[in-house]
Length: 268
Image 1 (cartoon, helix red, strand yellow):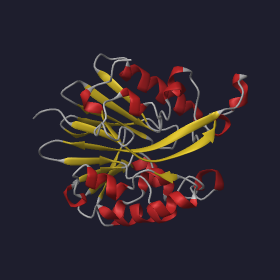
Image 2 (cartoon, one colour; image 1 turned 180 degrees about the vertical axis):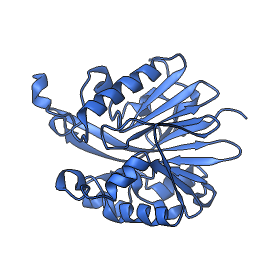
Image 3 (tube, helix red, strand yellow; image 1 turned 90 degrees about the vertical axis):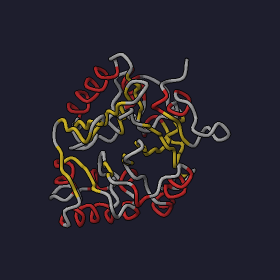
């Protein structure tokens, strides 16, 4: 089997401030500044299978949170010639609102999530405000329903999803945050999701403002950095606009829509 095709798809964006992005931004002694945050999901496919990594949010949820939709998920899938009915697996890296929407589109898919993640969001502390503001509760309830229906696979530690796709639980941002390593013909793509929102979180050792366990977040940084330092590994941050300039565009006429991570990084 040849390597997987990996596409990072931008479906929404917003402009925020550095103090709203980096934990305790004031300790770095820098002035506040505008920061763009892009929202992605990832399509991983070959001739035999299509796996979706996260499912974005719906336009309704985006409007309620002041996000700008650039290409709603159903439209993005159509542009990439992905039939939701042919997606056999959906990996939820963590259960925040911007990663769990649109699940109802994939009525034939098995959903894969960290067991610790699902247990937390269906447990006693998830509704406390410091956690709850990051969730969309109908999505969490749907995850619980799918779990009861036998359509959820819980994973822990390192998990081989299939040949060429490995999941790793790193925690930190959420209790069961996952990262995903995918083998490609070029090398491998490391989809950090929200273990690393921005490349400079890793480069400058700056944790994101939303954190469930700071020690685990730092350990996640170390894990991601160690893997990313291996030859032939392309690191894909979870929300960084730089993703769109590091990899070749799927559609050169619309370079802000999606990029081919499996083609390797563009020359600097």
